[in-house]
Image (cartoon, rainbow, N blue to C red):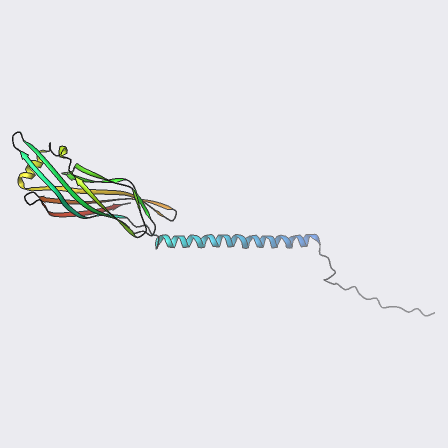
Length: 220
């Protein structure tokens, strides 16, 4: 009897039916998770850096903090009533000035200012004042206020220098005002103090303002 021999076929590897060890699949899964975490954190950091750059550019250009300004636009002499009694030496002075002041906010955000006052000074001494209530100024806006300053007669009656000025026919006074404002630019609060003063020479004979010189100063 003849025995028929069959050729043995070698085993072939099929990817579809092959099974990888657990250690290999675990390493691949871990690498994929790490890659996703890296991409996620890179995206978060990139977005934060972009936001920071935008805020920085805006704070240095459009939203750059600028100083609010206070200005005395005009001074008008409303009333001047003066009488001198030589025996005993006594002076009666009624002086009223009208002021128009403006507070300008050049910033792209609103500004707040506190309660303050405007004062009338004679040789550095306060002889009259008027309150200026707190308020808010819009962005790129200007607030105008009309104030009336009246001399307190008892504050000048004891000042010997005023008699000399009256005899010369010229009375020099200073109108002074200041504000303390707060400006919020993005997340930063900036405190500003602005002052304005006008030196006024009053001609007693004509009851008029002869000349005036104004100054303004801003400090952060």
